[in-house]
Amino acid sequence: MASYSTELKVGIFTIAAMIVMAFMFLFLNPKSLDRSSYNEYYTIVDDASGIIPRSQIKTSGVVIGEVADVSLSNNRTKITFSIDSKVPIAHGSKVEVRTRGLLGDVFIEIIRSADKGKYVPKGGYIPKSDDSIDMQSLVALFGSIAKDVKNITSSLAGSMEDGSGNSSMKEIITNIKDITGNISEVIGDNKSSISAIISSVQSTTDAFGRAFGSSSSDLKNILSGIKESANNFSELSKQLKSIASKENSDSISSSIAKLNDAMTQFQKSAQVMGTVMSKVDNGEGTIGKLLNDDTTITEVEGALKDIRQALNPVNKLKVKVDYRGEVSSSNQNRNYLNLNLYTKKDKYYVLGVTDGSELSAKSKTTNTETSTNGTQTTTITDESFEDKPRITFNAQFGKRWGPTGLRFGLFESKGGFGADFYMFKDAVKVSVEAFDWQTSDNANRRAAHFKSYASVHFLKYLYAVAGVDDITRYKQNTTDIDKPDYYFGAGLSFNDEDLRSILGLATLAR
Image (cartoon, rainbow, N blue to C red; front, top):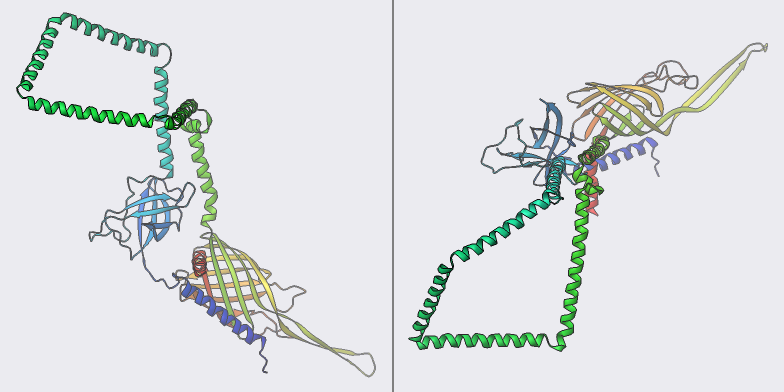
């Protein structure tokens, strides 16, 4: 069987890994081939607490974009956001700042108006809804309601206190007494008129009797109806009597007893409720302090603000995963897997591993020649080297100033620094790295290990890389500089949002 070299095996593994990862991100991730364009809009709000770049933009519960920038504008907050161009924003649409739960994420909801053929232009202004109530406004409204309740209960308590309250009740009783006295006087002064009214009523009833007396059939029908009603009432009374018989007396007594117990429990509950409301009105307990003490509401609002500020660094952390494979002219293959942690747009940390090879001594041969007189000795030493596979680590801190960035830390487990230059909106990057400085134990190269390369992104996740490596490396057994080691390769990069999308699809696939 033919044996395959280590370089060929590593190359085949690298190509297979790149194909698998490209399949994952180009076919499993629904956004990997997304070439949708986005339109920018902005809005002005008084308070943008919790809104940060990359916060979600939704409409009818569907994510259609994200926040691009949050800045101050004339003592108010200007929020700039991007929305998928496929989603038209009709004139008259409004913006609401909403929160998922008490401590949930804050997002922006676009309330779209009816589509009448007129739309907000790119870069246009979308006003904030007047009916929008966020969590802080709700807390402030709750505090205002609590103040009103406190004022009402204070007024009611003041009216029932000794002094003015008792005098008011006495005045009401005196007024009732005066009214009844006035009614008695009116009846006494109008006895003759009242007698005349009674005589008129009597005359009316006599006339009614004479009228029915002339129509005995009608009167008979009326009496028959009265008799039938009396029979029905008698039947009803019999049924009620049967219900209240001895057989059902126990059930009725039990029901009445339960009703009495329920009324007793209700009275006790009412008394407890009265005691609780009295304590709340006096500002006792947590609810009483919350309703009556403005300091408590202020402390609650401060606590919520502190919690959100504590969670902001976690929300702002952006993770980027970068894999790169390289094939060099000296048949040395390297694979890089780095994790870039962006705490800010211009500050980040690099953590990763490198799968490569290291130049080490393989064998050493010493030849000694001695002259015939035994006084002169010549020693010739031959030493050969080989590349041994090894795993190294990367741990760097990076800072960026516009198109220029600097890094320092561990490069392939060796101390050093690097510089990056960004062009064409970060589509092209040129980098220079220096590490593994020359020491007495490391005399394989002059000064340090220098590496220079350029990378070009040609798709959203894929990029190509080419460069020159170890340009100060000595030739074997000499102090002459060896020829440069040229290499090329390809890489794959994606961020935390892409990773969450892939993990979500993997969960659904189960």
